[in-house]
Amino acid sequence: MTTARTYGQMCPLARSMDLLGERWTILVVRELCLGPKRFKDILDVLPTLGPNRLTARLRSLEAAGVVRRSTLPPPAGVAVYELTERGEGLRTPLIELGRWGLGLQPSADIDPATTRADLIALSVSTFVDPDKLVGLKEIYELHVGRETFHVEIADGRMWTKSGPAPVRPDLSVTCRLRTFLAVVFGHKQAIDAVESGDLAVTVGSSEVVERAFDLMSGSELDYPVYVGM
Image (cartoon, rainbow, N blue to C red; front, side, top):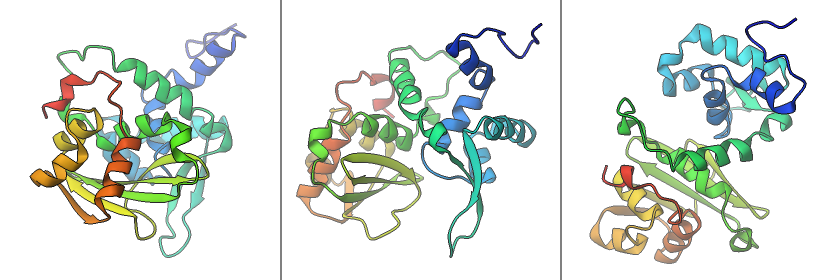
């Protein structure tokens, strides 16, 4: 006997979709891939989700051991939701699914203004060539339009996280979204963007700028619909 909320199959994919297949659930997990978030933080970037539905989605993810509640250390001391170790196991398949979606033509009801630099950085940084990360320990802080996020490199891995860098970064840049997209997707060289004034560097050298955007490069991906923004 099954209910309308389950596929009722033993197949692992079906069981995964029993949890993740409800609308908004995967996007909640996506936001937590960028680091711990307050309830309000999630709602701010998914406003049409609504507080009641967000509560329900978080409860189901908690019950499945994907998400847990915790408190950030002082001075923040605020309650947040974060991925568990099991939840982290969703990072690669979800981002790979997003990369697959780059090849889909956006429908007419999708607003290009919802493009976010942090999600693009999350995608490309997850699949960076690990040979480029060997022996590298750096933090890049990016102010793109109204977004602020940072990229951490350590122990052969590269992570994109929401908010400012926790320590003084090796690089801090400010630019508009279209400049970020043009550089990341290979339509413009980072150093050219600096020289033209489109990319302002407040911390770091030209060498670090070039290295950072080389690591974040996703030029092998086809993303032309957003580059003109």
